[in-house]
Image 1 (cartoon, rainbow, N blue to C red):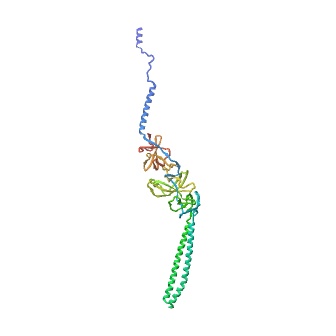
Image 2: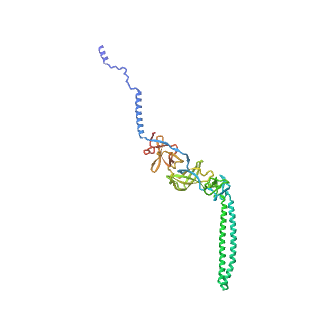
Image 3: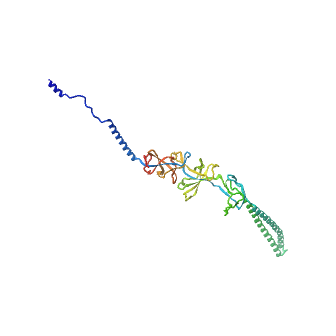
Length: 416
């Protein structure tokens, strides 16, 4: 029995505590997952980087902002100066010595007002001589008239006697010669009197020329002569002879003249509204309109001069002030320009930031890694770059370079 039990025990399986199974540590799973995720991200970044368009960027530099009226867009900007259409340096018609000057800078004068007098002693002497000559001619005229009137009845009586055969033909011829001579002397006396009176009129005019009057109402901007100086209507060789008394400006005739590039003169139309800003008053918007375009171009500057009317007149506006003019126009409803309320007086960007699509000038504004397509209107081009007058705000980041690959919403990456 004992042997049998021993054999059975040998055949029995050992069901003791099972050995622990060896498993990989947990951090190895985390490392593998991170590796897979990182690889996927790196792959996605690589492909997204390959799809982004490489560009360079530039900042839109604002030259000063102003707000345009609602619905009005600045089509073109130009600079110029305030000028007076009626401006005269008043001079005398005769050479003479100044004895009185009745004007000062800033003084208001009216048309016909006496502003200066010249020495008139010689003119008065010539006038007195002419008056005497007229009196002498009148006396001669009276004598010739009397002689003719005395000879006329004698001639008429002799003519009747000749018709009645009372006197001879010889006697009648003598009477006829006497009346012809009296008539000729009367005609000569009349011409001499006319000449004397013309001389008197000239002497009076010469005397009046010694008095210098304002040709129109205005303000004196320059006093050029003083009492005791010589003035002459023509340029004199000596430096001691003045050619003018003073300068008068009609302030009601002030307007602005600007030079517009001939490349953009087609945008300037008569009666088009404009906005004027004076350099002296940068915050003052002055309304105006186009008067005319001067029909000639400056070959050296490639510009055309445009006249601008100022509304209303204001005493603060002075000749030769610097002015900046924005030519305004009605923008189409819903257009990119009409939707942009603030209009810029001038924003400069590199010329490489401008593209042309569908007959429009466009730029691509960069927002993070996405670009936005914006339609713009261009102004003049200078050494500083291309001026944009509408459709772009100062401080915007614009794409520069090969813009043919860009579309609205394209992804970009900035390169140096």
